[in-house]
Length: 260
Ligand code: PEP
Image 1 (tube, rainbow, N blue to C red):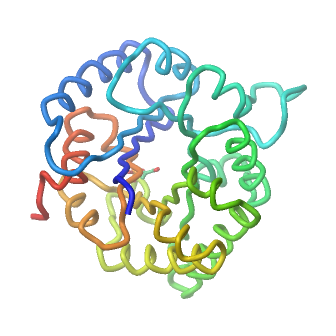
Image 2 (cartoon, rainbow, N blue to C red):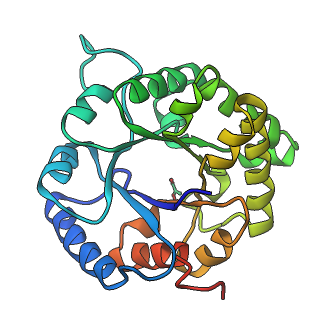
């Protein structure tokens, strides 16, 4: 398995001065933990207006990610931005298919597939989000739903391209609700996702693809979730807004914090 990844999704939060403060504080805390435990990649995805400055001004110990890119090419699309634009200002990652974008901006599986294509063509690394609603889980349709999302987004990608795709399993019922999937629920779905990846792309791609968990992951439950065999890190929302709690989640991924 590759290195763990802990990615922070700020969503639509923080003013610029707060963002600068966060970077200073996080950099200091992460520097203190340097070299401890196993290596873990760290990524921070601030709101889009801050991306170029993050990528160009800060030499922080983390990658910079966008929360979205367009499925369309450059042109008459007011307010939108392309993967190439992100890459041209030094952004490393882009989060795609987040359930909030699917809900708030009517993003379809087809649009997410086109975004992944554009992001990979631009040389970006991608985090593909998938996950079911509570209704679908109650109907026992969550596995079919997640399989459909992954199939739609990754069919046709080569193994080299898949090396730049991380998957984030984010059950919608756990996002921002304080309700976390149990480690058994997370492991069950992550193992299923790995099996879907094996079916679509072969065993080697499946075992090399990182599968992150997202949904009310916090310092108190991160170590237990990360101890699951098929959980390779986390996509963190609320707990990524505070440098100390985000750094504690990174420490859990490094194995420095053990499950309580
Ligand atoms: C997210 O939206 O990606 C997320 C995981 O949010 P939270 O951690 O706040 O549930």
